[in-house]
Image (cartoon, rainbow, N blue to C red; front, side, top):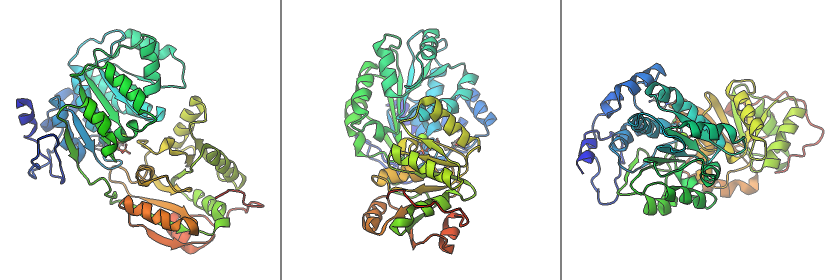
Length: 429
Ligand SMILES: Nc1ncnc2c1ncn2[C@@H]1O[C@H](COP(=O)(O)OP(=O)(O)OP(=O)(O)O)[C@@H](O)[C@H]1O
Ligand SMILES: [Mg+2]
């Protein structure tokens, strides 16, 4: 493939870079191109990026953009916060810019993501660049009225950023035809290949032309995506700039072993710390209960989970982003992809389901080279299983036994020890 030969002129510095499907050679180490123009992106897009303060490609971008630009199917894995959005977004926009006018109800490109918040975020990241290229983009997510999505489609958009359910509805209604789609991106691809999403994602991909380009990205891209890869990707190239379990090296991991009855007191003292903090709880009811109880001890926090209306979800995340609240309590709906500047601590109030969920939750801090801390509250009986899960995640945490008011708790998390006590801690473990 001659176009691929051109892409090979930009090998990556990072090991391991794998290729798949007969392309067995590991690429020789070489300089990461110093700028986006050298990766083959159009000058207008490079200028638009510079206007956003982005002028040096991150490793995952240097690795994947040349192959994506020449039309190859790409599997891209880079740690949380490593810049995957632009890694797929830039070649996608470059491709969209070549179309000229958009067509009513027939987009040319598709980005599928697992949550509504992530759809908005990806669209917000790409929109200023798209505008400079004359590319129209729009979102299709559930939980909001159809009117504006229908209007945008009717007017004609080049690119849709969507959650699978709502896009499926729009396709059903005849408002969106996928027969002109040339590029489909699955962000958080391993989650999109989960049982919950797979039927819808498969149905949508089937409606796109078989010759279309497919780009699959995630921090934890693994064999979970095999079903989609085997069916929908042709001769894909895999770029993995880090081993799947590599810890982000600017992230500190702590396991805090706590007495069972002190879970709320310790959680509250950590939530009251200065600085932006995300707390993850397992269930929607757990999130609501915790936010209410934090309020009782004077700690104001936003609650984000799938049981809230989209209006409230959007407002809660905006308040956290803008710094009007400094604590966000969330279910795993906020675990993947969400970027908020300056989150300095992620606290797993309830342990995550598995090592992948741990890495994604944790990845809301220490993004794009920033540093951050991650703490997991563990009851003595949960200790063994949690340590095993962390080892699978490739994380070697510092383990500390703490009680409310301990100096170690303050040193590790910045916890405040002067909160009023609740009459009786009801927060169930
Ligand atoms: N080349 C770059 N130079 C400077 N900043 C960048 C660059 N590329 C991306 N960023 C910034 O890095 C941050 C993280 O990027 P992004 O959200 O794309 O990470 P990600 O790899 O998708 O993470 P996750 O796995 O959590 O989804 C964003 O704020 C983005 O604007
Ligand atoms: Mg992302």
